[in-house]
Length: 150
Image 1 (cartoon, one colour):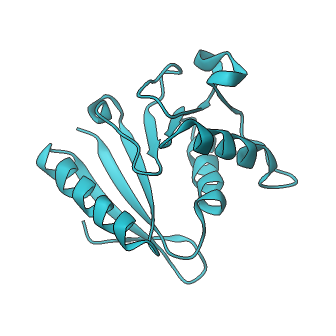
Image 2 (cartoon, rainbow, N blue to C red; image 1 turned 90 degrees about the horizontal axis):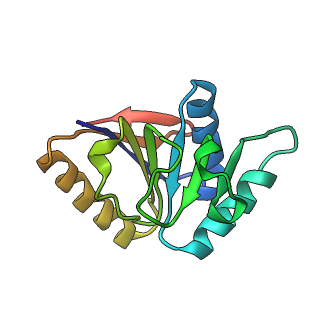
């Protein structure tokens, strides 16, 4: 059973929220796969993670960077886990037929897009029906995450 957290972006963009979530998981010693919808999005996220903060550094890479198995944070648009990650981070409705091979999944979606919210609700139902433990997180007034429902 995978713990699936649905992260409803209401105050920040994905480019702002993703690095902070990755920092927390990386600081706790986790390896992650960030799976996006297409190669273009992955390249944009790759650049974002290099430039999101002056004094910040998240070791990461994508297929084009090489050494996939050595990357603590691996970015991909494919269904793969070359770095032995225990956490899957889904963005842009990325496919996850291998969801049950991860301990945790962070499913980030844009709360200002009604279609994205509807698709997240469908993923929630699918995950629950598959026996995964689902939690729902929404951004609070200051942009931090507040657990609600579940």
